[in-house]
Length: 543
Image (cartoon, rainbow, N blue to C red; front, top):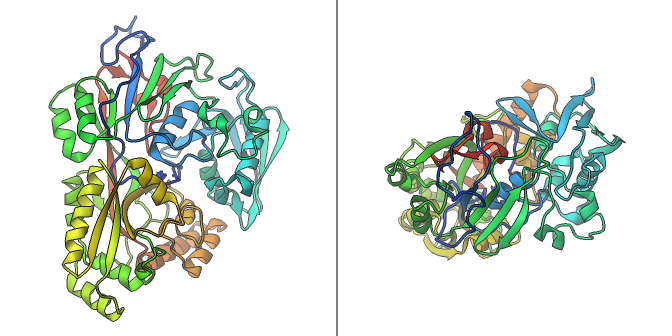
């Protein structure tokens, strides 16, 4: 899904990550070859000097799929976002309400909160040695706002139907001018990593530009090599403003099959990997890995495609009926084995979000009522298609569970297993009509305004194709409401309406589980982060 612990990152990854949209906690894979470490084999120990981390060595991270695009104004899947985190430095990040400045030196709002002054650090450079200045920040904002460039971030820079303006004051200063007060604006800036103007300024279509194949960024590691279906390698950027990274290189190895990936992890061919709950005990028993479960502010959910060519899921009564045929507790057990890694969900907001409430209508575990609703809606002999990302254990388990439970209420479910890339493409295509069900997840950050791209009519990441004009109106009202009490009332109402309409079946607020080889240090300084695993890979070192 095209989206983005503590803070203001909004994605679904997709991604998702959206795949932040991926139904499992993250990446897993098969046993393909990857480059060896530059100065020390991955998985071996190197002594520290005088108690200080020693430079050198490499880190190999298992990812489930190839990146979709290495450009931060478009990246929304978990793999692309993870790689971009090392390639492109953000302006700042937020953890536990505290800013950590990266490219930015400061961000200062005006007294009326209609202007924000951003100061960049002096001496910033891109990976090719060119200076990084205010021109790049302004160019990035204008590119996002350009409708022809089709960036999903655009919606978050439109306030009350008017764009935010980015104005260069001097080489190190940008003034953001807002059309009205927007409590969510700083959360929007967290999502934005500048792209280089000198690379892209003559490109008509930034998303399709060949320049994305060998990206020039500003992060701790720079692009070295990519072999589709196998690996992507980054090498240390010695002039990184945060200090020279300890590692020589970082390789993202494409490992699609979870069982093969777990074997590669145990054999030392991978050093970092997302874990499915089903596999934790096996990896933990080796005593070679730190097992790090942490909250991403992530919702796992069953999505209903209201615009599929069957037309059945356009009726909210049918969506409610499907929800009633299912049990959250049973689905959590199927997907995650235990509630240690998943708390039952009711709202489309996650508990870390502002104004979250679980005081909403919920449809759950009442098959008899489900059959009544289907009959009242005039629906019989319903056949649904459920798309599944192959190798994703949570999705596979949930799809089989849903198939069984819906059959009990007279609904046939056809399971369609897809390659992870094909799954991501189909899921994120808002024009896809050839499926009805998908198990996915998103991480949207703490401000509820970020969720409007998922649930307002016609939005770029409205993958359920949901539409309710009252919800549209309330999201718009909430975005510009400065009074916290009134804003809370607005978003409570939004949660109630969406819960009643059932465009999704919220399943669980999940924890992500990451295994990291005990041969690596600096993990706490690198900061565990939603979607991208680590906020700053420059801090990690081989012991």
